[in-house]
Image 1: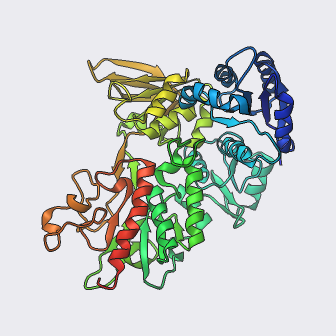
Image 2 (image 1 turned 30 degrees about the vertical axis):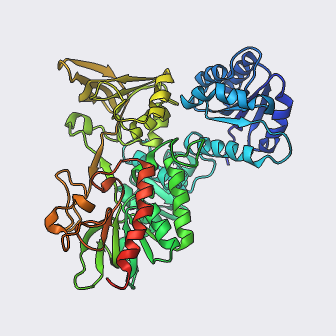
Image 3 (image 1 turned 90 degrees about the vertical axis):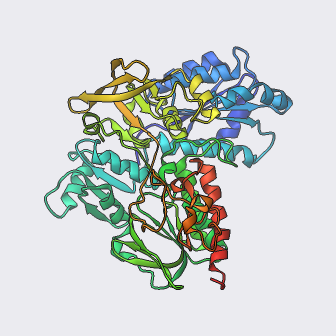
Length: 556
């Protein structure tokens, strides 16, 4: 446990303050509940809390305030504590009117949830929304009170940052301890050998390792590749466990198919790095990519999917004359009657040596959720115009002094969802710089500056930044696939009518999600022509199961 003060929930209401404080009494063990009756009082109390070192986890405001409009009030309070969650609560008599009036503000991200004020005991619908928001705050903002993985290192850059990001994505709480701390000395003393940094202690196995890569940590948690033990021929192997692969696993195993899912990195794939997905069906308050992946994994496990995590697929031997396909990994092979390729994509590399040498020291490929905390009070750049870049910018703005989104296009309208564009345009810490690209960077020990070039006239400008987050678009990793699985010129897997006609069977094209090899399917971002959205990937993962069923029928 820790001696740090409890985080606070600040309630703002002139008429219903006592009622709301009573309603939040169930959280009093873990949170300090602060009652205020005006915006000015809330600001004063918040400043007092922060001076005492108290983190404000949430602001809860009445929709009707005497001294300010509620959305404006929450915006003012967010400027004091950008990491807090913000909830607007309307009494029953004003709920319909206020929900219409404040809908544009909600869409722009001025607050996180608009809820009906509880009118009786045990309003669990209200508290479900509150708990989900506190859950996300605790996972992405608060330091863990209990760590399942301890990292000992004199600094938290480079490999340490990559390990922390991986652990965050798999839902394993971790902390970094200096070697001369009490925990650090205990880990060093227990380590068998001459210590090198970092040292990682995994409590589930009571094992201490000195990893040279993130994969070493994954193996210490999940086991080595030669521990894959599948003797039977399974119905379907899913390669990749992002949204598409997880949806395939859930629906295939729920319908009784013997299902194996193999993921080379963390469950959730690229989507697992998203700080908050607000346009996924059924989550009105939004959900982080990590939480979505963890829930989907639990759902698939419940139906019987077996997951093997931390091992890349190295090849596939396609079956002939009714023989099963063979999925090869470094330590073992898995035989399957059908394969669903759902391995997703990686972010494209910048390929500028002067920038890439600072990877892990200010330069990050992807959202790097744990790196956001290191950017507090610094200026950062996010390069990319897709939804992932927008979500990363919004999350970074909770910590960084300024966030600049850099895109080659004039603006974000052609590549980003409107709800994110609205949220970005409202956030005073975020600006968009169009018609520009990164061409150089440098610093001493860590990144300190980058050079931007105009795509219009070639002019250059050096800007001081401490963080550079590169979300540059999709690049498939399909080198392990057999050559008879056809791909387009960019390496994405062809399916359905996109497969060249010479590979059609009896003049008929493959099914919509089927590849050029019978019994091998492709879904999600790795598939040519896919939408590159979480919801569409999950939809393809669910849809492909019907095609797998058809393939597995006795006629085949």
